[in-house]
Image (cartoon, rainbow over all chains, first blue to last red; front, side, top):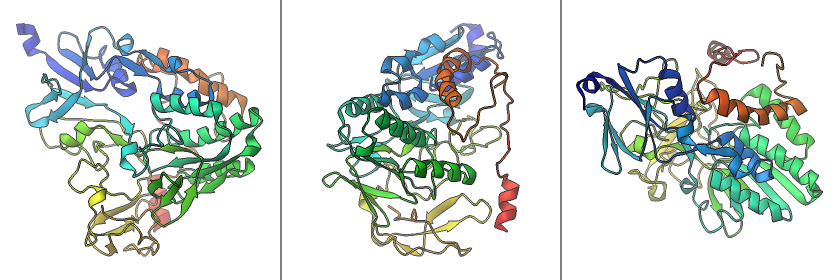
Length: 375
Length: 59
């Protein structure tokens, strides 16, 4: 290291996706190259145009249409390091990579994004995954779905959202409308029964949009199953099962798995229950660490937050080990109408089959069906 | 967008569909390289409920 390099400040960006690449491109011209080094870390050199995943299942885009080399978009004067992050150590202002390398920083930007996690819903990632159970929030998933749709002969298509937040909350609805058009164009719409299953109380998060979009579902004879918090997927009977014991059968399930942040965020103790870094929404500065290292990450879809339990199976209280003595309670915040939350503590027995009787919040509002076991 | 907008967000229109497909070009050539876009930094609040309104309605 030269004397000049030793006095330079280091900006480290974890993730070379949309946000990380934009941050590098925005800041390189603003931070003098003599004063600041900028490094982007990602695990591969492939940049994916994720909005294009929506079109791949219907043959509007081919997989090649959404792939470009990541390095092509990293500006001159920014180093791209290929490697997987193992852990952030805020006390040391350093990041450990899984291959043993250590990267030090003065300022850290966490832009590692969010990932669909079919492993977080029982029955989702079994034998039927990629056959009768699909997702389109990844390149592999949307490509597999395209293959399935080419030869699918019709039946019950269920489009399903596990939980919020998800990146691009409107994409499931767009997919549903595109599917309606796709089957109509192929002369088989009357052979397909479409159901839209959502944990929200309506078609969308916001009331006005929900009303309009719900009407558009009606016009297309697409059934809406709302307030549906999935407990598991029964692969044998091909049925979605909710915590309040509703069942939705399918022949083809297109689901949006639980979206979660990167596992290294959890390993570093920086994340919430979904591995997202809590930040100040005005500054994007991390609010979860008091060390000298600062981290920030954008959240793609912050509201509404629905009741949930610790979901990562890697954690100390996995869903599969739910104890009947565990209890939880839920409430609706009186200051933020769309926000529903719960915490372990009191009032609600921990049982996956006991959610048919709603709890009451402290303010007396009814707990949604999403109130569920603290597992 | 200046010159060609605004799009009607809650209506089915052909321009909405083409706009969605056109976004790929904007993504690769303007958004990702960090170019300044001719758009206001703050989203329009038209038709949206503010936090203050939400609190007021709840009380």
